[in-house]
Image (cartoon, rainbow, N blue to C red):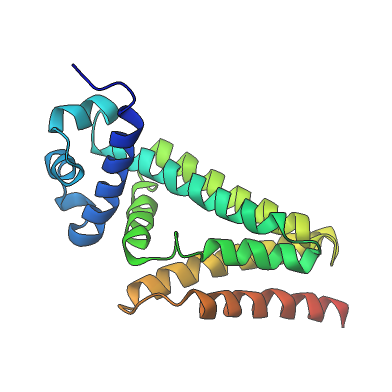
Length: 195
């Protein structure tokens, strides 16, 4: 008989296991059985909770998106000015819980999956729209709406691009330098509009 209250714990263990497995072996080389073993549960239980590996990847991405949203909201709670809100959004995207090698590997697998899987594509679009919307909200206090749209798109592309470049560099990710690059670009663009 299953232990009452264990489902959330086991689901989280499976999500953590898939992140580590993707990082070590790549998504295409990982099986549900391997993920279940890493999580300390049976393969049958993993299938019961998630159905298949694709569904587990989607659940993992929902989890990472939720963590990202929580991280940014926590940082925004202490931000009082538009510039502080921009800094909070950028720093949240490179936070320690998100910008670590195993999580980066999971995000890269997710980007690839989004090319062919409709639900993964939908989740990716939610992430992209949320990022641009958060930036746009803060930027509109500093520049016109059209200028804010341009800067938000540039900043979102720069965040995603730095993620990919830094993750494939083969070195330990450096969140502070990534944040500095994005902030320099954003505040430089704002200054040019005011020149």
